[in-house]
Amino acid sequence: MTYFFETYGCQMNIAESASVERAFIEAGWTKADDVQVADFVIINTCSVRETAESRILGRLGWYASLKAVRKLEERAKNHVFPKAHSYALTNKENPPRLNLAIMGCMAERLIDSLQKDYPVLDYVIGNFQKQYFPDIIAAVEKGEKWIETDEKPHYVFAESSYEKGSHSAFVPIMHGCNNFCSYCIVPYVRGREVSRSPESIFAEIDALSKNGVKEITFLGQNVNSYIWEEEGKEAIDFPSLMQAVSQHIHATKSSIGWIRFMSSHPKDISPDLIQLIKKDPLFCKHIHLPVQHGSNAILDAMRRKYTREAYLEKIATIKKEIPGVSLSTDIMIGFPGETIEDFEETIALMREVAFENAFMYYYNPREGTKAADMQEQLSIKEKKRRLALVIAEQQAISKRLMEERLGESVRVLAEGFSKDNPEELVGRTERDERVVFPAGPEKIGHFVEVFLTELTGATLRGKIV
Image (cartoon, rainbow, N blue to C red):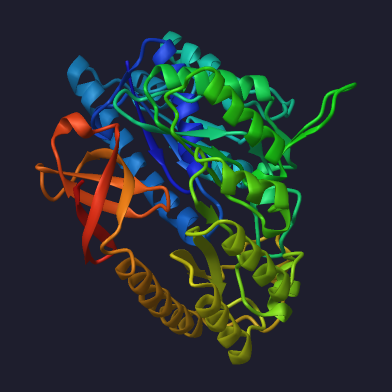
């Protein structure tokens, strides 16, 4: 039997899809090349923005049509059309050939309405139920209906499925968020923070190393708040874990050459972590540190738990201690009550910090959050206008910073062939810059030195030294 994943949203969703995929592989299933021919389709969803949910609901309509076609094909194949047979094909206790599951944050947030209003779905799996997929798979193989338990279990970390030929991997180490920013749905759909045991993390690193992985990215909704506590032992925080990971990689002569992590909350970036990144070459000199806004009034309304001045002070420390560090961020425009002066403070902060890259978006109300009920909601038209200005500002900053890199030699992890030219490879620097260069397939999966010669759009080009 075959399966197919359709994944939306963040890197954590990508990692969680990979961990669920492991259950299908262990059950002997094969990954379908095309959703049209899959026996089981799993949609992993995102709830951060309304647009993501709207897109997924639209996809459910498409899948309803696909299911209808499958049923007709089945009936035509058997040359029988009695009413009883037709009923059996549409009965949830005897699933049709295409089984459809929805999982992730949208499934967690809208579980009741999805089960009630979307009969196309065979399974609605929340964030705390993914460990039941082996049972679901077994039920599907037997033509039975999996019955979910009323008990809501705790979050379970699982090893990711490794895709042969990949040289980078995501490793989730914590889940959930305790910050409750006023605009954010994540704490409500992901729950409170839980951390993964160091032993489990080391075991996954070892497994990835055996498969030749060269770069790992530690993931968490608030990754720097990682804390592992055991009775009678000293607690392990994020810097301590990273130091232990580095020691483990060196001691085991692991293939891992680079370590990244995301996403971080500014309040949790500690001096110990900054010093570790500064001194240990395993850690990429790139930090993604979401600022969200440049106005103290808006930061306070967002419940971000830091001021503009505190953020800039932390940035100044990072730049001083880690020469050549690359910084990226998240910026939200059009939060309720945002004045022109607030907006201009954000532009000014962008210019002062000079982020290499930024994920930029306008505020989107999420039902159930405090910000959704705030007064002074801006119009979509005005939010789009301000966002366009922010994007143009960041593009200019990014272009200037990348042009300054020309003439330098940089270390690049060659990830694969360029889509535009099969005689070129594409890779990334430790600063998370995309680089294209002429080279043969023997370089894929290796670190190479590349001399940067030109900039094309948002891509650096060069040649192997």
